[in-house]
Image 1 (cartoon, rainbow, N blue to C red):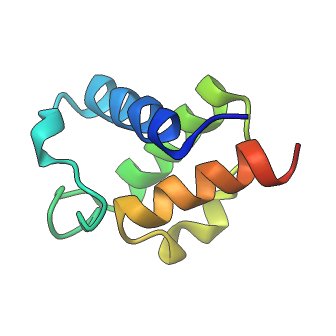
Image 2: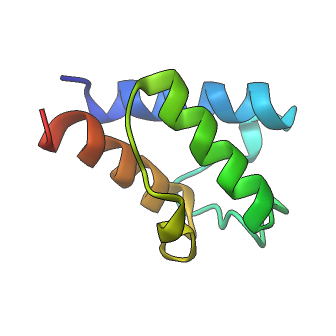
Image 3: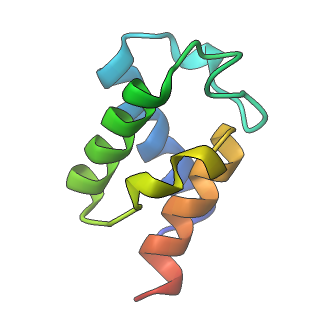
Length: 84
């Protein structure tokens, strides 16, 4: 079981590796589309990277429901901790 801080660190690390954006841009309220300039395709790619790296399965069909980093952290937390 991972703590919320460990989940945030892992998600942030994968985000930085995938996008090349600085970690300083990431905060819980950062909007994936507005603040981080992502589109549905780049969000889907990010979700796929998270799924593969963390051995989880966040459905790509839920892409419209994941609007902020907070939503993303919560989805990963749910997959890693609530379903184990």
